[in-house]
Image (cartoon, rainbow, N blue to C red; front, side, top):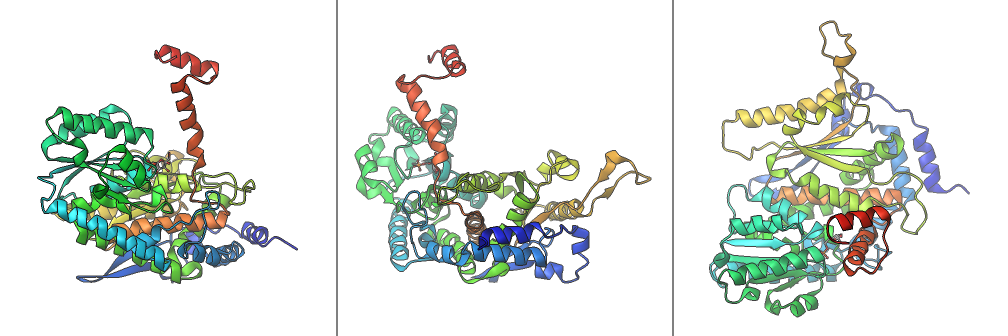
Length: 512
Ligand code: F6P
């Protein structure tokens, strides 16, 4: 009997690669390959348009990928995700991040609501002055405990923040010193965010922050600390009062934890009402992802295109350009989400994968990137699928010309990548030739508010999950980060032998 997954890939490999120009002869292509996810807002329905028409997906490819999704039991895996079944098989855990925003297994949703209420009480107490005058928060965490808070605070508080938040992740003391310079110790709180409460960078930075408070006249530095963690007992042991420990479940992965107490700095900066909107936007995407089948499921459709470019066209990277300054940290956030989740070489059952897994995610903001890296996208030898992200409503109050130029450039880039042409007078100069037929997708938000940001992030979480299912890998572990951490400890303890190059580097730096 033929393996159904192999059979689906055989079908996909046999399909011709049409050009985008040929695909656009279909007059209903844009409607067929665009879809919206919406949620109610004060001013009527609000939402995001996902236009995948400038990718090479067509009816035969979609049918082939739907065959693959069935062969991979996509529907069954999705059900396991929302039912809090053990889907992170290598660590024997469920993945319950959706429950933190209200979607999934009832007891996990209830647990999420209770934890959110607890966080809300502390946030509101701080806003009401119960912990004294709090003007600044230094949020200390790394990876999943930092990238989400940094992105959301940066995106949502450009106009006004209830508390001024500084996210510090790097062990390089320069990062923490910079936050110290921007904060007044008398009005500063510290959030220590760590799922494990053992990460060396976070614990070292946290100790230095406490010392800074003490050295600068704060009587009880520990009294100014809030812990955000899945290991509450460790936080208490470290000296944080139980009333200021905001726990989250072990089954919420670090890079999926922004919806849990790791979102505390976001809630503190924007207020609980707005934070609830943030969760609600994500919840709208959960509902779409859980209830929509086949390529109408926009997260799965995006994963079909991702798999097409990685596995059938050999693309090694994918690029994301936000034509919105407020999303300048989004590529960093997506890098961790996608590369730590799907940068794997064995399947969930431990077999060698039979094709490439996650491409390298990279990107930047438009229009800046146009003047720096777009040369390669238009004329380089690599085929790079691009996502463009923009908001119809501007984030600024300046002359509308700013936003018009921003949006027209965004749309022009997608059109130019697809159309190609020759910019020389006689149309023959090869240096001025654009091959075209280069793919892009456009994610167009009605307005970049808290709900929209939540929806955008949840869309990428589910897209990442869908890609993992189609490749048969477990997106919820990250053992690849462990070996380097162990070796750093070995160097510190002096208890291990290293290669000649590493020994020489250590000696030259006075560490050997
Ligand atoms: O080293 C990788 C990692 O484990 C990430 O997955 C995680 O988000 C980050 O470190 C921080 O871990 P923690 O929240 O436990 O401090």
